Length: 244
Image 1 (cartoon, rainbow, N blue to C red):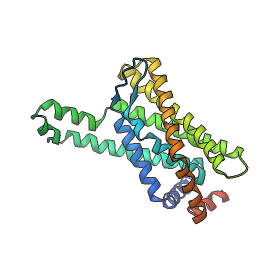
Image 2 (cartoon, one colour):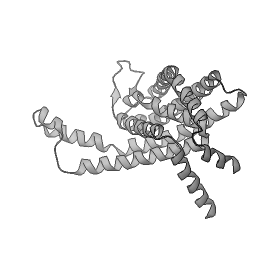
Image 3 (cartoon, rainbow, N blue to C red):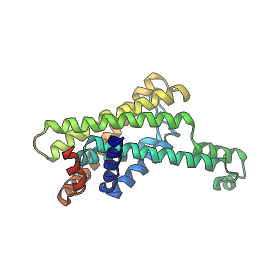
Image 4 (tube, helix red, strand yellow):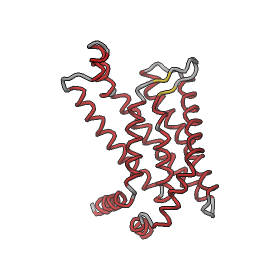
């Protein structure tokens, strides 16, 4: 019991230590990418399939890389689970909203077609298999990404931009590939009719897009980490973790 209380106290301290900007961006990204995962992208190629969640998924991985670099993999994973919890709560709110009698704005724009209102309710509510599949995929990929990032960082003795790029590129590539692959097999393959080849090509393509985004935004992530270190962000939490 004392161990549980201590862990909860450490988690509360972590929440107070992590800047609200990163937590807000992280939660927003997780919520948006799981909602956008309901829409498939028409590629025009039979062996390739993607969903719109890829538009914002890179934000979540960027946040995890920053958190892992500064607070460590355990803290980054705890914040990931916290973001997932808020996402599941939002899914519950959306589901309840879909059951409330009423009309969406598009209902009037499209000539009062009942099917439009029903479709929008179904989209905002989400399907149980999409929610479960995305949750499992996100948890697994977060753990893989965070601890891979931390492990690669241990190889470098000097804290440099090159070291940051190496740890983020490799961990993000592996984490994003696993995230897409797990979701594709759990959801897209069984419920959307994707082929095995499409599942793998989606995972690989998502990884490439994610790495391209990392190439653009990794300097920002590194700058954030340097600023946090200079300003002593989370000093109390980091000191407590060193004592454990």
